Image (tube, rainbow, N blue to C red; front, side, top):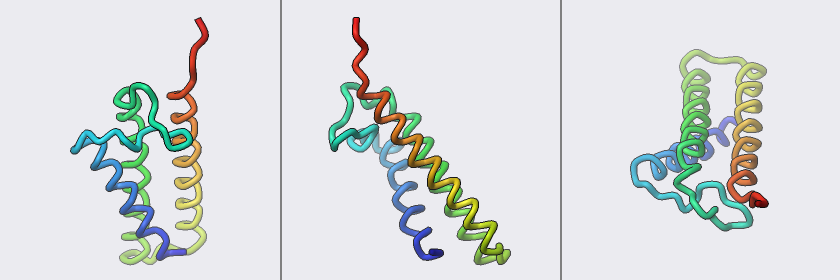
Length: 102
């Protein structure tokens, strides 16, 4: 399980880099593989979520290696972070694709 932290952290930090530095909004708020009409509108939220998740996972990796964080603690941190990131990404994608009736 520890080795699984590395790809998650790298992928999320790379996604945040693409959103903030490269202004690549192709992966922001996807629903069924399609971007919303205005992906730049949701890019800041999506980028911050990716940055937070990747940073937390990277810090947990360092704490395990340097400080010897115990198993129950780091799995709790990783579990909560993973589920919150997935749920918030899902909510953003649904909100971005929602069509308001006028």
